[in-house]
Image (tube, rainbow, N blue to C red; front, top):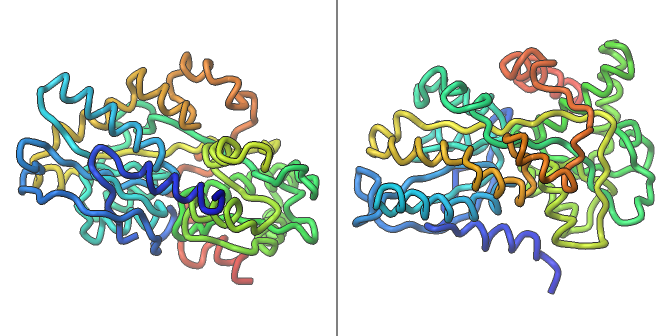
Length: 358
């Protein structure tokens, strides 16, 4: 039975070398359901018997990637150290996941959709300053971008951002208040409007407001939005992570089409060690190895196979048939960095609230 197959795959593959636990849960706080399960009783040093246990709190579209990555990391770590390790995995909207760590979720590492969500945890004293330089390339071992997923035949002829504001076009996108992917979606649309209207902010606001007027469902996380579009059949177009769109094409051959807009954004999901927790748990060494191994050739290939863009340029080129490497991408630097972007667009009362509540 095809119904709910996409959702079921995320749940089944989310059970990793350990098992998946739920977070209490981007750009703001909120709540989002995540995979749930239970883990073996742990000691205070992060071990369960002779096996180390660490927890990775991640955002929702990474379920398939980390299900596979946790297996190869566990094999690598045991070969290198003789120590077995299990990884407990939690998924949800990125902002909600950040809030869950702040509220007490015992994450050893976080692998979230954007740097700002990790900065929120840092500001609470759980992560040390300078985390973004702890690993290569802004502690972002893989990237993605924002694309459109439409139904086969593309009946509404959706090709670019301006097609999303046309009358009768039903758009699905998650909520920037809880979803990191939604923040990237918003910024890509804003940058397109900036170029279209030569920086006239009133016209830019009108454009993006018209886009959100066409949004019929705004889920709390990117995977929920994909389920709404793919499984529930709502909407004409899904504004999506590239990896989510490619996964849907793989799962449902012939049912959807991917449209790359003329302007998109380099989305950089970030990773960090939760310093206070690893010191309490005695898991710093394995947590550091867990994030460092994301840059290994094996993990970079695995990222590409799960539709994330590898940071390793040579490996990325081997996936040129999968990814459009010629797309025109803006970056978060075009918005003054994440701290500035959050202040301008996503904090309470900022531009997103202004246009959405208008």
